[in-house]
Image (cartoon, rainbow, N blue to C red; front, side):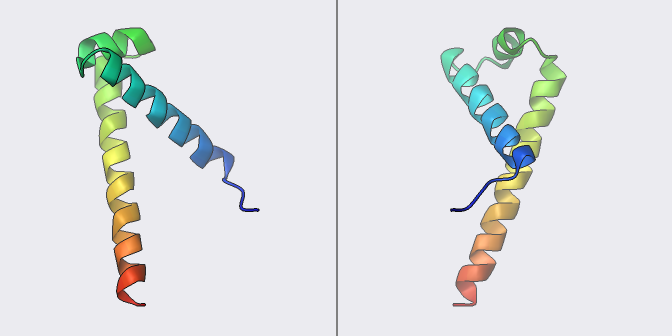
Length: 68
């Protein structure tokens, strides 16, 4: 059984909540930030952080696949 670190699990839960909220608001970031009760700039920063993490993960997976 593989366990996920708490910080990673929390980040994933936050990401999922933001994505679902964006879908509900038809990707209106102002409305999504209001519903999430965070500043719009914070929402933009979080989206950018997730994009960077996803790019890093994909880069690592491609590096591993290339070595096989």
